[in-house]
Image (cartoon, rainbow, N blue to C red):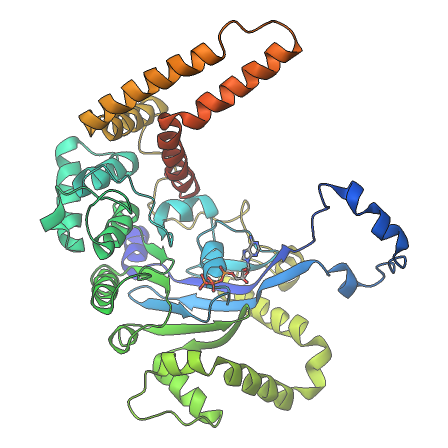
Length: 454
Ligand SMILES: Nc1ncnc2c1ncn2[C@@H]1O[C@H](COP(=O)(O)OP(=O)(O)OP(=O)(O)O)[C@@H](O)[C@H]1O
């Protein structure tokens, strides 16, 4: 018990070692291959794939031997140009992507994916919220799905969270979206964060929480996250594009990435020192992160030169050696695996991982029946929200049903009749307004299932 509370106080330190993630870029066969067949016959016969390098053709490295560490009470910001691999790394850390190799440790213990999903929150780049629900209702449904508490306690949790997120003044306002007028973009981002922090996660992973926001709203969000880290010992990992000067000051450490590799991992001050060591002239009062992003090509070139200068003799086996070294680090810290075991495993430790004694329950907050009832309640609220619109849609559906019914009336029981029945079905489904609503539910369900809420 004492150990548990000590761990809770200590917070969660996340360490990712040697993360490599590749995607297949093999071209799919042309669906109408018949048209390209002739061309292929005239071509030179393809050379046989003989070596490993050629075999890996068609695979693209999204993450290359990435190392990163995020500490509790701190914010780790992942920065880099578009396509650097920031989102992919966050997805790996959140347990949504499984890399081909690498290990993730929580407080120096191999990660338990299922437990981690429950104890962490992952906020995606895109808001998946129900536009017709109010802010309070949105957070309440998330609370009902995540927490096993009586109604009055749920209400006070939601009220407390809204206060923390600075959403009190819009509690009764609809969330809205591009079509339905609702709260502002910054407030919507805060609601999205609220949906994923209602269960008070130890680790919060956010993919571009400030995207599309003006500098003041962006600063407000990072300020709020900083408060969460500093007052509750949470570990915050986020990706961000072009952070402003005042935002950069709130980061405890920065992970600078380009082309799937880490160029810098440390404080902003260390980044400035490294840039100067590389011979770059930082303008006075410059935003170091912005400067590094603007001169990313030079940083990459300098890094390559430095690597070649410091380890010329190791070039042929540098990747293997560095991985070996990192695995050694993992082994010595965790003390649970031998070097050989980890090296052979060479993938995220998952099923065999150790339950490291945190008090996040593995079960679900509700039974299946309760979950179904909560979701049905939300679905019906969403549908009946605008009664006039609902009435219009119902009449519209009845009329289109009658029209379609008259077109496809009296179908025969032969092949033509079967074809016509098929097209009747697809026309009906294509027009169904309910299908759109179900699609929104589906997106939200995917998010909840992958977040371990179900
Ligand atoms: N499923 C996929 N299929 C094809 N390419 C992918 C896939 N996932 C990632 N990539 C590629 O991997 C690279 C890294 O993608 P990622 O989304 O992680 O970058 P990012 O740094 O988050 O970019 P951005 O800042 O633009 O969101 C990109 O070049 C992207 O095109």
